[in-house]
Image 1 (cartoon, one colour):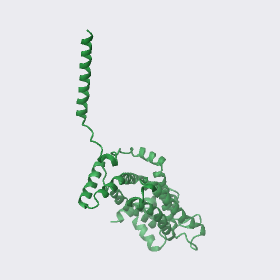
Image 2 (cartoon, one colour; image 1 turned 90 degrees about the vertical axis):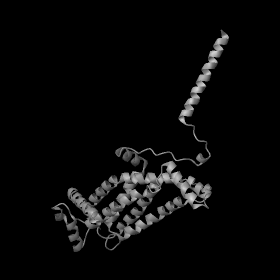
Image 3 (cartoon, one colour; image 1 turned 180 degrees about the vertical axis):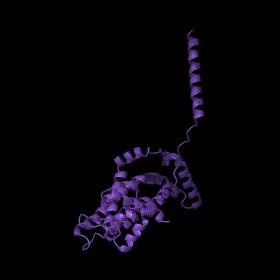
Length: 297
């Protein structure tokens, strides 16, 4: 099953390697850029869903306090709130599930392309879907004095290769900060809600985790991580969002999120009632004007 994703990705990456004057690093960068641009609509949908859920947190907290002793009413009130705001609580999961095999395929494509053992080289040649590309194997695996198939740690690579895991950590942190929706709580409101606390802890843990991955994986995969993070930083920046929204036809306008005072606010009058009241007022004003005119005569 995974070969349906791996093999086309490996073939495309190898073809780019041949087109780009056999520069594997440039091929990895261009390949990563293309995949991130193609998957941007899914990322945008996931971010929009997360932002909408974040905006609903004050209302959800109020409902949880009101029905803390009745789980059935709590669940019903939450679903009513989601329906009123036009929010699907699982809306951010589907785009993530679709992206997961694509990201795994991208990662594995780079892993197979940078094969350095006889078995891996044979496996790579069998995955190529375009005849003639097997003549490019083995690919050039040296870049700036670093072996792309080896981890960035000495003695297999020079000491300056350790800069790459640091760049992985830094770019991962910046991307995660930019991708998070703004927090809805302040220090004066007490402790943050569970979602915000989880997001803050993830912003600290994930960069460190990816930094350790970069120490264990090959230098070529560090190039992929850094490239992917830089693209994410551009995507989540205001300028990048504007450009990509124009490219993909703009954003759909979301329904306004109900405020916390909506429960106590009076229901708006129907349009027909408002129109009838306006017509009655105009009729009364006309009758008064006619009365005054007769009196003057």
